[in-house]
Image (cartoon, rainbow, N blue to C red):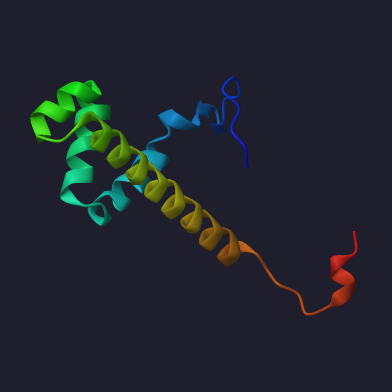
Length: 103
């Protein structure tokens, strides 16, 4: 699935980024991140700190802050996709009848 900047994904009637379900799912993955990753993400997305502010507060270089954010987002994206696929698989009935594959 590719995301285009001008495309808005929706869950029901609301934009996906406002979905409480999505927020709950993402929160469930946060304990899997390192303490540093959680701290950096909190400063970036909850406290709206710049990367230089985060670097000062965490005593890291701005480049390290960028890599930490990128790695954490990649992990969260992967975990979210795996959860979606697992849910999709559990909701799909698999038929042993080969004719059911023909539309």
